[in-house]
Structure formats: structure tokens, C-alpha cells
Image 1 (cartoon, rainbow, N blue to C red):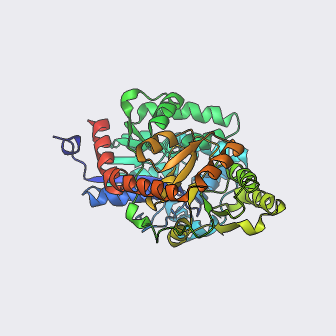
Image 2: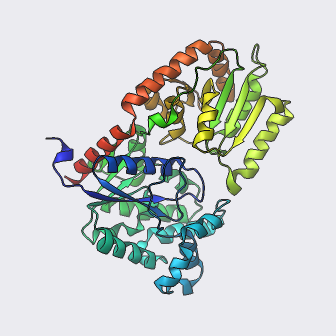
Image 3: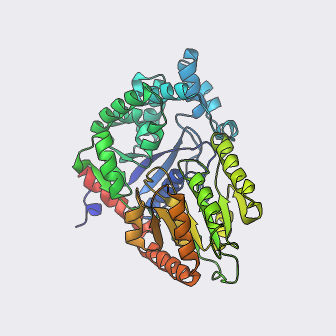
Length: 437
């Protein structure tokens, strides 16, 4: 008998963090997983926190937001808002208002953000205690789930209160460390201390790679038996490859990620400038797509200006933020995709999207990427943050575009068998049962 058959698991409440009107890899993953779990007979309610989610597939989240960003901020800054009646709070939690308020992203003072993060982690002992009570009342009276899943530990201040209801809590770790790194002291150290205490109370954790399992075990002091690896999956058929890439068209490199420093946009730009100075690379084009918002707008504009200053204004296309159709159009025109992240990526959904579309990838040799490509094929690794080496890898691969086509086809085949949404859902159910058994 498999672990999936041993423990009753009929309803899950899955708390996911909205990303201020941005297409976010975690939101995309959570939405896909919730839909796939429901299709497997486990009713999964996807519950947005902070803001509504934004996804380029069918949005299966409920039309209700907990820990609404406006209320959370006002309760942090103005003590009066910690005592307003519930019907007034609901005014600020209306999804359309949250979307409008965060339309250009959020840009909060680093010290204010640190204090808010620490308060949220304190749960019933923080300034947002009223929000914790609202969530637990809803879970106990209206939903009564068999388990609650949190999309990250940064919203984990509510964990002790949920467990007091007799409901187990599983946390998916998929980028918590990146947020913590950006906090200033003393809030970074204080938040990490509180998180380590919360980690002791969590019933179990799920991560998407062996790399991230080891890293988060050390960072959050998680015992070996409390963490399971479920490789990231997706709806592969939503990214069917288009017509076979014509070798008569200009060689084209693509970038599909947030246009930020941590995603390595500057490494990509520097490498492209060097590539264009190499023999037989004059025709190569660069197609860039991704969210920038208020936080990364200046950085992205400066990097694109470097391309213009190098005389390459006619050699790149800025697609901006793309929806599902725009993503398919972008990928259909690529020989390879490269997102040369500076930080060690825990997920790399963009790489899976490219492989699902039959596009090979060139990725830095760190984070989750080495084990991803060892499993799926379909790509190449290079020395992280080395734009000279990256340009050389591009040149070598673009001189044999037929081999790139073959490598992309291999990647798609592996995606269909190993990383489809149904397989991810089954493995998630098994992981939950193992953690709770």
C-alpha cells in the first residue's frame, strides 16, 4: 500500500503569497499544483495572502485575500487599525483594490519592511494578530481542512494558531532565503531567529531540489526527517512547441525572467556585447522578456542602455511583461534560453517552461540547475557570473543549431515524462503523507 492510501487527505487549504501584480514563479507553481491536486481527488483551496495572485493559466484561487497588504501595512504603521472592526478591514481587502494599489509593485523602505516582516512572523504576538484570528476562524468554521500548506515560511507567524486547531501545517520552501538576504539588520537576524523557532513547530517541509533541501536544512535548522523533495513540475502541454525552428532565421538567444540583478540581467547583457564581437556572430539576436516594476525599472533601463551604447539597438527586442500567449510567441522564436542568475536558484521555472516548449537552456552551474539538467538533459551549464565564458558557450552552441534543436527535443520529451503536473501532484500527496504519518 502506497503512502497516498494510508492517510485520509480530502481537503487542503493552500496559502500562497500574491506578488503585487507580478507574474511570480511561486504563484504559477502553486496555482498549477492546486489544480492538479484537485484533479487527483484532493480538494485544494488556493488562498491568496497579501494580494491576489497573477498567473498566465486558469486562476483557481479563491476570491478572498487574507493578510491583505493594505491592512497589514496600516496595522503595522497606525495602532488604531489594529482595533478596527472586521467589516472595515474588509473594505481594504477587496481584490480589485489590492490589485490597483499594487499595480506598479511595492517599494517599501527597507527598515519599515524589516519591522513589518518581523511583526508578521510573530503571528498572534505581532501587530497583525487580528489577521491571524480572522484566518483561523475561517479555517475552523468554514473550511476544516485536513492539512494547511504554506507557500513559504515568511507567512508562518500563523502556524502555532493553526496547529492549536488540530490542523497540521506543511511549508513549501521556494525562495525564502532570497527575501531574508535583502533585509537590513537587526531585522534580518531577528527574523531568522523567529523562523528557526517556527521551523521546529512545522509538521514538515517540501522543497523542489536536493540542493535547496540541504541549504534550507542548514539555514533554518530543519531535521532530516522533516523535509521531502518534490521536483518542480508544470502543465507541459500548455507550452506545445510551434513549427520547427527555421535554420534560415537569425540565431536568437532569449531571456525570460524578472529583469533584475539577482536573475543576472547584467551578466546576460555583458555576455551578449562580447558575443557580438566574435567571428560569425554578427547576425545573432537577443529577445528579452520579464517584469521589472518600480523596484527594478532603473536597473533594467541601465542595462538596456548598455546595449544601445554598444551599437546593438537593432540586435535586441524588449518584449516587456508577457502573458501565456506572449510567452509561447517568445519561446517559438528562440534557439536557446539563458537566465544567468547570480543567486542560487531554488526552482528555475523559466528553464522548465523553455524545455517544455522544446527550447534548450544555458544555465549557471549552481543552485538547482545541475541536478535539473542531469535529470532532464536539454541544456548546458557555464561558470556562474562569468560573462566571457557565457559568450564562448553561446558561440560554440550557435555554430551547430541543428544540435540545439535535438537537445531541445530531448528536453521536452523528458519534461513530458518526468515533470508534468499530474506527477508533481502525486509526489506531493506522497510527501505530505510521509511527513504526517
